[in-house]
Length: 99
Image (cartoon, rainbow, N blue to C red; front, side, top):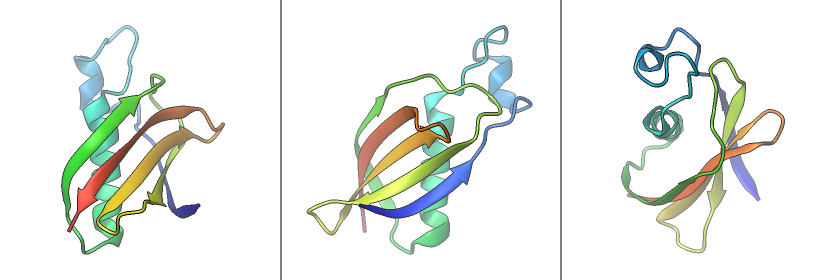
């Protein structure tokens, strides 16, 4: 069950696109994970310690509306996350450990 849902977009003028396939810009995975970290940090005092796993399932293009969902796990110190487009295409999913 979803606990949090946060929208984001990576605009086509983001500096990462100049080196990440300039003729066919794809958002680098590290930029997507940065959004996960920043959204978590903006709403939670608990710091992310480590990412247990991340799986990238679909490429993300510039200027696509996306959202991040944080999901409960059985462990109180772990959260799962999923990044989807507004059309429900799964971009990536993963799990992290926090304080």
